[in-house]
Length: 204
Image (tube, rainbow, N blue to C red):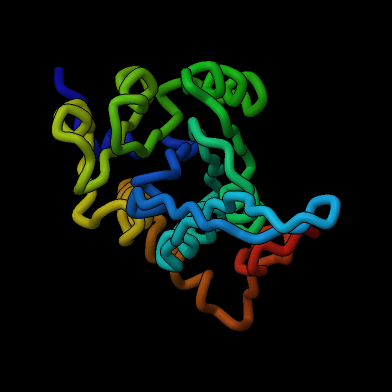
């Protein structure tokens, strides 16, 4: 019997995201920055990415709903580390060419099963996880073969609210989306500091 996307989403306890093409539009900016080394001016490359505030809010909504969130990405970038700190993500794995290795560590650390994990991706490197996790989500502009293997394809693109779509679909399936939104905007019930996001990459 075919299991619906909604039924799969109801079981989710952990949401894991790729970064490039999911939290961003896939663009990677390499900016030369002048530095002085031993009195000589040279340059070093600094990587920059753009993130969407709607996707940031999704992490707050997920956390209010009792879900844990994380990222697994092949690239290693300080901008990703800063965004992860900003969002207070529970799981952060960079430099992961084979993402199932990180998933197995997360399962061991959090005590969740594969069918309780959602994975949000956009390219073929994400397929090994998407093929075995409980709920596989592809961005609207993901590669076609990735969308073909997803349980749900977001209406919005990566870096343009697609990650928010994934979170809201899960919370809606669990019957708590409106409750989470109302809690998020209720000034009489503020989000605890340990859950709040948006400190601009604050290292603390």
